[in-house]
Length: 369
Image (tube, rainbow, N blue to C red; front, side, top):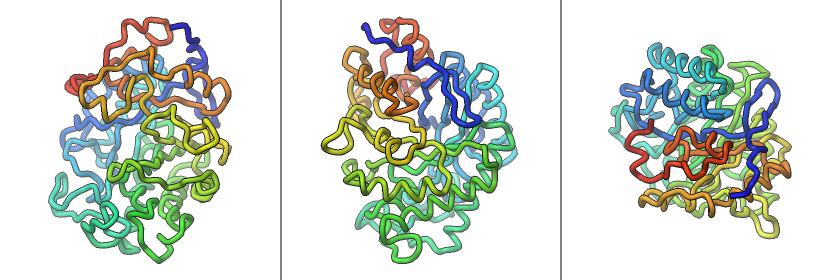
């Protein structure tokens, strides 16, 4: 393959965040932290990617300190003495390998079912009690419950700042709690937390502001958002650039430093009449740095990969990615499943050793090494 990938390996800086490459390890749930505590194997897992030219690692989703935040007992917590000691070791290992790392702070909302561990007595929470349009699974959140969750995100952000992480990412995508406030299909509130598009952004904006107050003016805050939801793949928060501008403005004003715009397929245009994807439009509208993500390195999208489809190089639209980087349309490239399959994926790409790529398939998930 003749594509010049060197732009992906140029250093990048924004504020106090300096990365050795434009490649970001995207967050991917592993369920490898029994009792919510990441062990030495988690540190080794992330260090291997940092040793192999990944500039920024965004960790798997980590539960904020709220009883209903997680729905899996093996998903790591970002609270508690043992879990934070484990995460401090992870950060130290990544830094020793020359990488930077942010935890993804996560609350699953109504994706969690009543009775699920690690806290089976905690009821699920959701903006309007909806898992998807028309499916009521719990009560609408009260103002005090909303305040508790905002505080939980701020507490986790303060912990990340204190133990040496390089920023945080707030998970506002894919139909989880924050996205349940964003989406008019699951937020049918009529108070300050719902209604029009701007009020539906209020919850996330308050989380961003609280995280900023809990850390520092120079501590990077990223926000991951998506149009699609696990509840409805064709859902849209915005159908036009003007609508996207409306929803991004309150988040930008709240203090988001980097937007992580999640597509299922990064190469697909977001709106008619332009080749730009969601990340490209987000940068154009906000002027903020963006991470583009969505099946980078795969020859099909993520749903089909779970049928044991392998990854290829010749047909993965990497030429389009390089154009986006070269044209300053996007800043960083989030790579997920290829970095699960092959910790050395980035260095192999850099060194022209694509024939040595390990293919991604469902078998890759068995080890997550």
